[in-house]
Image (cartoon, rainbow over all chains, first blue to last red; front, side, top):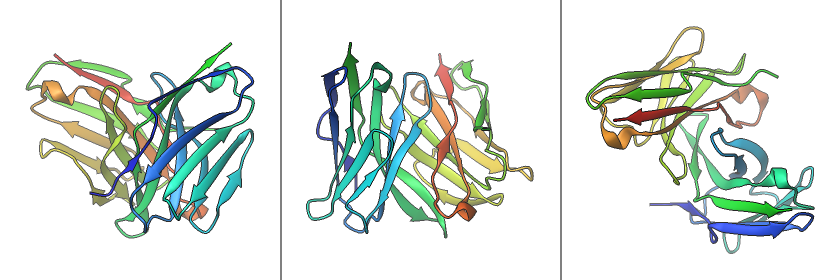
Amino acid sequence: GESVGLHLPTLSVQEGDNSIINCAYSNSASDYFIWYKQESGKGPQFIIDIRSNMDKRQGQRVTVLLNKTVKHLSLQIAATQPGDSAVYFCAENMISGGSNYKLTFGKGTLLTVNP
Amino acid sequence: AAGVIQSPRHLIKEKRETATLKCYPIPRHDTVYWYQQGPGQDPQFLISFYEKMQSDKGSIPDRFSAQQFSDYHSELNMSSLELGDSALYFCASSSPGEGRDTQYFGPGTRLTVL
């Protein structure tokens, strides 16, 4: 079936460097994507989202890029800090049951920030 | 700001026992979602409720059932527990009325089946 997946399972960076986490999706009809951060033992935390009518969206220290041609998402974290260490998931938000949504998660990427 | 509350945070059960997980959504959120996350896995959608009615169903075993109550809290009932049910169970809530149906997750319940 359709799925959302990640290219790299782990990423290790030095504090202060920029991080890029990638995600590929296969459902070309998808129009809404979310990045979540999950720290050990905690629930997924919303970071940033993007709709398919956009190519780029910026937040605080984070940027999401969407390339619909190759069905690819990326999350860029500027000046990565130790507190950014976590598993990052991209998720496809699909309409289900009327106006409600369900999330299809990709495989997470473990980001480790070395001091 | 108030977040999604889940209880209990940890639960240990024996095989074939039953378990009930509770979820209290963010105030004024009318939609609740349940997800199961196995070790090293991504969260898998189980079931969702909108205005106390089931709105969608995912990979939820027949041994599990859930409901949403008049105060919008939800309970996930799990019977005939199996070892493979050991996982983190997350509840998320959202409010379509806010214009963007972002799901906010609770801290999860860690279920261990022995």
